[in-house]
Image 1 (cartoon, rainbow, N blue to C red):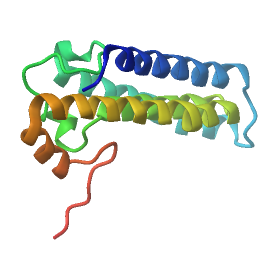
Image 2 (cartoon, rainbow, N blue to C red; image 1 turned 90 degrees about the vertical axis):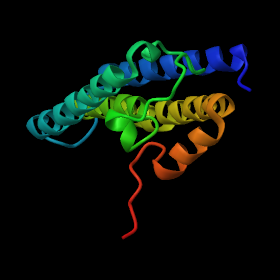
Image 3 (cartoon, one colour; image 1 turned 45 degrees about the vertical axis):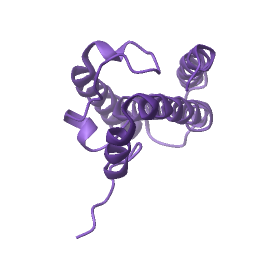
Image 4 (cartoon, one colour; image 1 turned 90 degrees about the horizontal axis):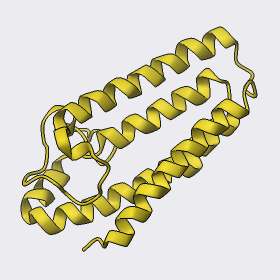
Length: 157
C-alpha cells in the first residue's frame, strides 16, 4: 500500500525535478555544439511531440490527471496511448523536457532531465503501479504484462 506521505513525496519530487530541468535548460543555454537551426527543428519536434502525447494521454485519463499517485477512478485506463504503454503522460513530459534542452542547446538541461527528472518519474510510476496493483489486482497484472512501462513492447510473431 502506498502511504499518503510516499504519494506527496513523489509528487513534489517530480515537480521540483521538472522545474530544475527546465531552469537548467533556460539558464545554461548554448552549451551544445549544434547549430541553432538544427537544434530548433529537432528540439521543437520533441517538445511539441511530447506536449501532444501528454494532451492525448490526459484526454483519456479525464479527471484522473490531477497529479495523484493513488487511483481516483473505479477502473484503469487502457485506451488511447495506454493501449501501448502504462505511463505515456510521464514519457510525454520527459520527451518535452528533452526537447526544451535541445532547443536551448543546454547540456545542463539535458543532463538534469535524464539524471534527475526521468528517475523521479520512474519512482513515481513505480509507486503508482503498486497502488494500481493493490486496487485492481489480477486485472492490473494482466494489463501490465502486455504493455510496456514507458516504451511499447515489441510483439513476438
